[in-house]
Length: 482
Ligand code: UTP
Image (cartoon, rainbow, N blue to C red; front, side, top):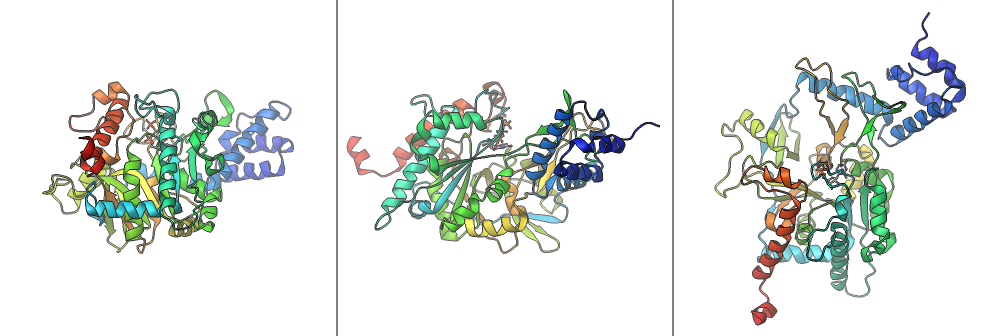
């Protein structure tokens, strides 16, 4: 009689530790016995078999709820994807409330001053684990020069901006100020060692090494079918194939590492999340933080004016038939059909301002630490995930290649209670947003009127913003020079 995967595993139990046997049982319970079918008798490839379980242990411990929870969620999401379930079923969109700022007017300056004062109670989190496939650069993105005159790389620019903010904030305090604004950088296997090298070979660009902490995100298991069977690597039958889980991991890492708790206990009040290649962002940070503190926002999403149908997510209030409501990023390709299906026959159109009433999300978030800590204690940092399998055909029964669950940093508000204060701050894109994401060839194909998001457009945006700021800021020194 042919031996089953269960027999094969039973034969091999003697080479495994008690913890590994427990993991093996979990995998069998979760109907993953195909992973062992090819295993030879004990004595053959034993080190590989143990290494397999080392990887299982890592996948299990780095996911909130463990691998069993991952497989269970995957089955639910794959079933929803197969049946074409509308994620917004029962929800009606409306425009949330937020603050629209105009650079250098009195309102802006007041918020900016409030933000600088508050900055010494802030911590920064840079998500820098992405591969940057669209950019096609083979180094890490934070090592790229943000502009070619000084060749200051993004990481240097970010660190120097945080240090400048730290100084400016301390100068506003009476008496001594020892604030050291912490910086966490989330890396991945693709970026970790090169980020460490960049920091160490440049003396942390002037920041104290103790101020900087790197948290590495782990990849998640790939899935081969709608039953969420785990995929083995094509070239190694003793390894699970893995892929990145997305920048949403940052929340569970801040929680599980204890970093968030330390910040909370140290009396810090804000966490500011930002991305790897936006050379303008720090021009917008102080005023946005001022909005958070003045309006007491638990969540403040930075946004830019958005032309209707522009390829950027819109910040939207979604209210469910049952009364639930949330303020959340809705991807541009979902916003127009959602509006049309819920009583707005024209869909996503510009208002009299010339822009869509739904501001464009630029994925830089400011969270208030107290409520953030409370929420993560409840959820363990798990963020609502999604799955995006590429099916072989319309029966949706087989995939072209393995898939995995993903999660996005900006989906954090999806689990918040209705009492949460979630708002946004809109600033002009020339001041706040010029990421470097696309290679020159693809940037040249961007439809007319949409931003290129290339290295060239990112660099030009920095020069342009500097010129516009000098022109707009009323400065006696400038008048004297002119
Ligand atoms: P992007 O949307 O730019 O994605 O990520 P990407 O993976 O870096 O680039 P492409 O899509 O392959 O071209 C937005 C931010 O989130 C970080 C990126 O480093 C960037 O700062 N990120 C993305 C992570 O930290 N982890 C991830 O798994 C994905």
